[in-house]
Length: 128
Length: 121
Image (cartoon, rainbow over the protein chains, first blue to last red):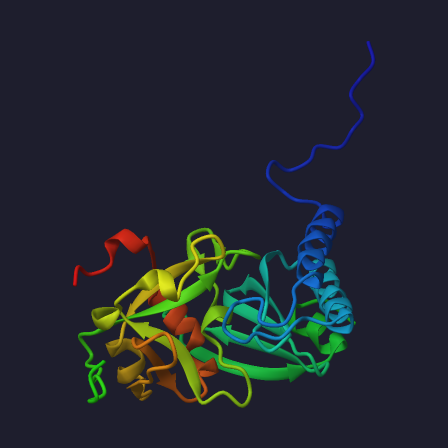
C-alpha cells in the first residue's frame, strides 16, 4: 500500500503563491482604468504605481499578512486593506509615498505613518 | 429651481455613488477609498436625498451603486455639509474639506441602497 506522503494543508489557508496571484490579477484590473473612471474625477493609476503597489503587497504577504482587499484610489494611488489587530490600510500614492493607516474598532483613525518597504516588513513583525 | 440654497441638517441623508467596476465593496462593506477626497478638492461630492429629483440623471446603475449616510455623521465630526448645485444636478452637495481622516468612519456607517428605496417626492 502506498502511503500518502503529502504534508497536511490547513483547511482554508491560502498559500502565499496564490495570494500573490490574486493580488496581481486584481491590480491588472486597475491598469485599464481611464481618467474619471469613477465618474467623479478620479485619476488613472499609472504602471509605476501598480508596480510599487505589487511590491508592497508582496512584502506584506511575505510577512504573513493576509490582504483582504485592494482598490484604486481616486488620486491615482492604490489602497491595500488588511488586519493587524484592528483594521489597517496601506496607501501607495502616485508620487511613490507609502502610508500605513491604523484604525480602532469604531473606525476612527489612530495613526497615519509614512513608511518605506523595509519598514513595512518591520511593522508586520517580519525580521529584516 | 429654488434660489435659496438647501440647508442641510443632521437629519438629512446624503447619497454617495460607489463604483462597481472595479468593485469597491468587500464582504458587504464599502471601502474607505470611496470617501477620500483628492488633493485640491474642496470637498466630497454627495447628493441630498431629500431633494433628489431624478436620480437617473446622476447615477448609472450599470457602473455604480448608491450608499446612504446621515449628514449628522460628518457634521458631528466637524465637517460642514453644503448644498452645491451643479449643472444637471440640483441635489449636489459637498462634505466640505479633506475627508481622508474620516473616510473610514463614513464608509463604516454608509449603507448601500437600491434606488427604489429613495424617498418618495
